[in-house]
Length: 234
Image (cartoon, rainbow, N blue to C red; front, side, top):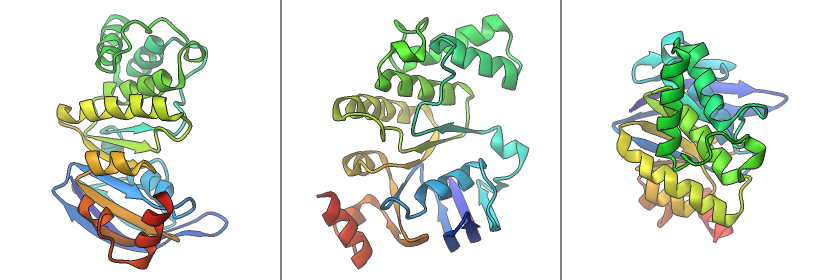
């Protein structure tokens, strides 16, 4: 995966991202970490094409992230599962495939069952989101993202609302999916998962990229900002 960020700034009521410039080539799984309010989730949303930056240009794999071509090749997993509450797990996936990919109902259902099985939910396919655990709902959300057959999966703190047991359940499942040839960009506060799953780490503080490198930077941080962040988590 090749990432190029040029003069990216983003403003809501305040400056969230401040003139970011960053280039990275050849990594499959990139983690973005930082304290609450550091800008990491905003950067993730810009990289996925969900939002447009106030200023600057961003390309991933030599494609502008605002293009329709790019957006068709990404999947997004939100902090909360974001499933349709009135649809079964299976229908949450098959309906998306029918509407966005033109699948027939039969083909869409077959694909939904395949991807739900991939996340070990083959016995939950007919249940509504409210009738499964939070971890199962989040895994169904991951299956939905995978079902679109994207090149890149973006995940925004996929375990933020889960207890430790369900967090372990979801992250164990995500690690299994790394062997399916997808690239990942993800935000997580679970440093043990970052160390295991990422092959590159970007640390943000106050809207800026302060330190980045291999996961080993988490063991020997060079900047005082990352040192403080790691000590706070420990």
